[in-house]
Length: 152
Length: 264
Image 1 (cartoon, rainbow over the protein chains, first blue to last red):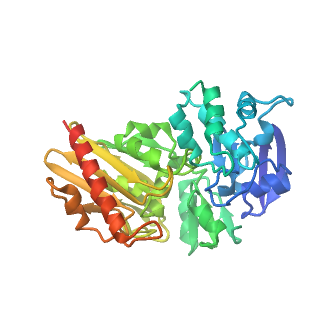
Image 2 (image 1 turned 90 degrees about the vertical axis):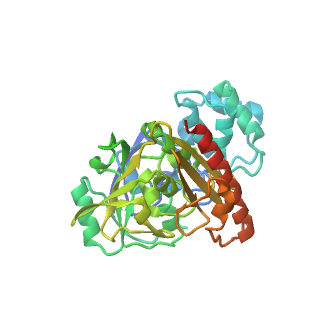
Image 3 (image 1 turned 180 degrees about the vertical axis):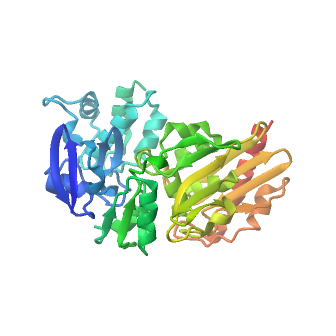
């Protein structure tokens, strides 16, 4: 067993894990943070995307053992004090989700893009979304929501 | 889809990492994990040991080489802004996976994985680059031309770690272009081509339509047509061999035209 000392959504957890435990399963089954969704489990769909030490990553492609000493933010950690983030507000306004399965991963991936030095163009938003599968919306409303926050 | 059981080793120094590789017959190196972990999840790979190099301090370097080149350490992520200083890497990296996978995937890991449809092995060959590999037995350099032996197969020995890739810079007056055809942005290439014009020399490399990235000798007057004669694409669910030959023809012509335009 490997000791994992990790901060998730500003709360510290100390756990022991089997080496083969994926970060996605650690978050969902061990910590009960089921907002991180698991779609394909091989890095294609993007539903499990979380923020690890400031960068958006696929949690199904990381071992829980690897995040010892790190800081993670999941979708549960985006909105502070119950208020939605500007991006979440924009998703609401633009109807940028239907079933919502892909939404947690898209929010985290989009926040990563919005946090970079230059605000993303619509083209860059579309390119980023190539890694985040959504089977309901046809993407247009998602692009609109992210673009509104980016001022694009 | 969960990996089988394995031992997890997380060395804090390069020496420790190399000892761990020397001690195990079927260890795999875990860097970014963007190809390795899917293969573990699908149980295509069942290594006894994973050697996680993410905490080896020596491997995070991006430095200028002694000749005009960029030296990229084994832990450097594909999203690392330091890589944009290299024109070939800057041209190719946006095609590698997705924004999120580039945050984690490494340049050297993609090269060591040697997927024929991956961009970075082809780019290293297009630059005439080199891999620096280390083991407990010592250190050696392998040119890109000699590195890729077959699909997912390199010249690295079982106990060797690819510690650095060395990327020669384009020279003043060189022209370079890269083109890829994939079904969706971020997908593996169905066909990709890099072309470098240096004086009268024309270097064309194709990938995804041959078992390894391959340098072609092309006729400057009819580059696409002469390139097609040198490849034997196998066809797949995505298209017939003739479809892939057409991709080669078109992409070689396009890259050569663009590279010539760029050359002074």
